[in-house]
Length: 429
Image 1 (cartoon, one colour):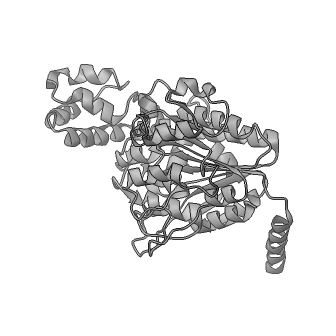
Image 2 (cartoon, rainbow, N blue to C red):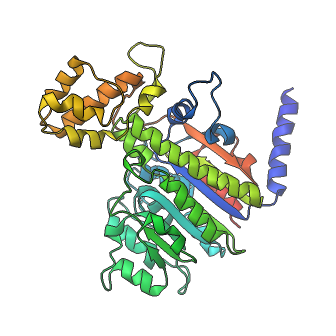
Image 3 (cartoon, rainbow, N blue to C red):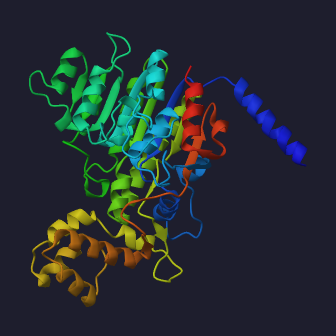
């Protein structure tokens, strides 16, 4: 039996090696999206009136899992080291953007794709020079060097008359200012089409294209009147990248899953997951229609130590999560410095279930301290759904991995994050 298994593995490897490589690659990274997030989303999006929980795109495309540890012995990675590993195939230190442990530059799969004559793109719901997209484009010894990283989106070129990144969609207006002779203005004058309104994505008709829709990160989906903004950006990006015969590489980050996790904000996280899932489904449909496109999704790490079930109870209440209509930050801002007797009325605007008098008293005790109020609110609202958290930071758990299209078999089983990068780089020819 073991001989047959070994033969099967060898046959799979040989067939994968002989297979035609994908013409296009779309790489999705859910920032902070550990396995509890994809599990929670399965229950969150299901119709609670039926007994069968319907599958999600994460279930449908799941092929394995990935480890995420950084170069050092801390085990827990940050987004910069995690993204550098996913972009280049090399481990680095926390805070590193496109450089190795000795701060030497590393070229990403996006750079490799451009060198092969492919078109390239990055899409994110945070500012596009944030850690994850930055690691595919720039070299910096610190993720905090935001302006230095933004400048490289324009200044780094493999050929004088070609930009390194043909498509840039997300946040970050403050780092690409449009005043005369500033970075954004220089990019537009050089030839980038530009829009600053999500509602005007259709105005982008050719490459290179630049769309920046917020000063820094986009608003949380749960707070936004455009909660499907990542899906809309991916649809626009595939329209632009897919209109020629040139191969393309596109990196898409669901950035704010992580930010919600840092706040232990389950309702915020599930709305971000919903947008991320919809964006992957846009790419899935594109890939099915084309037949020549590889779609891969994973995460750089997990955030918050999310668990489903807490307080000793054997239950998790997605219905309670669905009744929270704003982020903890928005609700906290509304409560801050208000009279305690107004709390119940204010909360009714944002939360579809009533808090107990004891809970209202706990909130009132910290009503003038913004951070304390937000964390107290996080504890109370999480308790109503039996959602557990272990940290406001990252954890070292393995993350989901999924793929479809030509070469998808290369992502089966358990891989390290560097193995994902190495497999993708081998396919970009």
